[in-house]
Image (tube, rainbow, N blue to C red; front, top):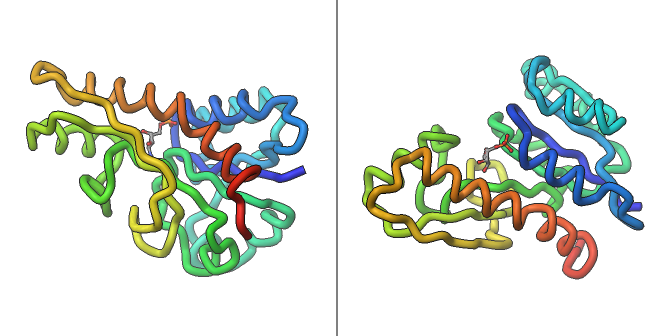
Length: 190
Ligand code: GRF
């Protein structure tokens, strides 16, 4: 079995799609769901599927390497709406084994502070004719690791930030789990 740990801070609609995608999969399983928020709905979703959960404390996440013991046996860390910067020790320990999804076409609209509605508001303000998703490896800087997959959607002039968010989220739900599956089966190089 190849084991996935999902890190998520919020609602976890992508996490849910990933959990559902791999339910009953012959060689890949979601083994752990990690959140930085004890009240995050994603933890309830995981518990409902019988998946172990872990709540991070900021100090131990950044000042110790205790988490590594909990991640033993994990083959891929998937960031699905996880807002904390990944510390160096984790990147070093999981080289090309941490992936993130960003709700825009990087390198545009990435970096610190560019998350959630702020991304879509910036896309709207710039009058872009398209937006999309980027799935990329994670390094020590926000949104700068090598791109694995991108898909775009066209935007209409009347689309507001909320409408853009809906279009982009639909792309995330369609592509994230299959791309993870491909990474772990066809292309995966450790
Ligand atoms: C997604 O748009 C993802 O791209 C971003 O955070 C959002 C998470 O949504 N990084 P959800 O929690 O999966 O519903």
